[in-house]
Amino acid sequence: MDIRHLTFMAAAGIGLAGCNVSDAPPSDDAATTTTASDTGVTREPMAAPEPAPVARMPAQAAIQSQPGPDGAQVDLLKVAVTGDILTVTLRCSSDQKINSQSFNVEKISVIDDSTSQRLGVLKDDKADWMASNVSGNFLRTDCEVKPGIFWVKFPAPPVTSPTVSINLPEVGPFDGIPVTR
Image (cartoon, rainbow, N blue to C red; front, top):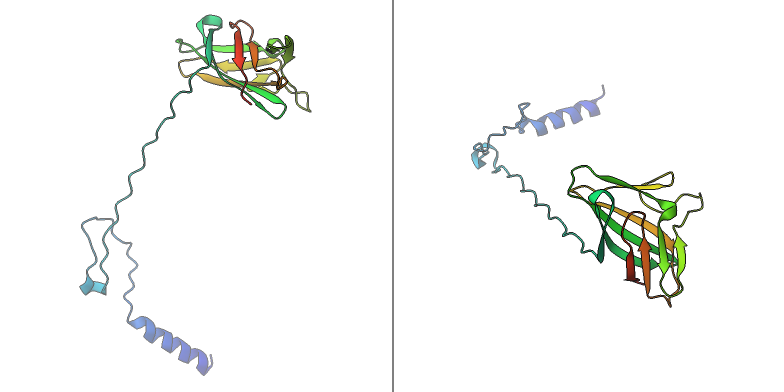
């Protein structure tokens, strides 16, 4: 070791000699505080903040409701056009604790009320149905005490068509529904 290293180490030792370093972990005792006479610093324990309560969103009001299979109720929540696509959002509920429904996607349709043209569910570029929870040709949803939300996409009707009718197998028809654009 040369003289520079020894001088540095000696200076560092002198600088640290005034520090009181303890290997003991700080106490979690809320009554213990460090006073100014110990180190010149007073520290008070901080209380953990209370978590904010989670507010539930109110249930969305149905545009129209229809009876469904096995005592279920199907609520129409939204019918809106974005670009060239019409999205229909529905909610299925039941008083039964266990009640799930399957709808054949090939039989779900929208009728353009102005032209009486039937519009089927869209498929994407991979030939998959553009709908939620689809397995094979069936859209599946839980219609239990906690309602299940599902959606289906169709080609948009022309701007000159202000209303559509929506048909799901084994569910009453949703007729004359205004389209939001």
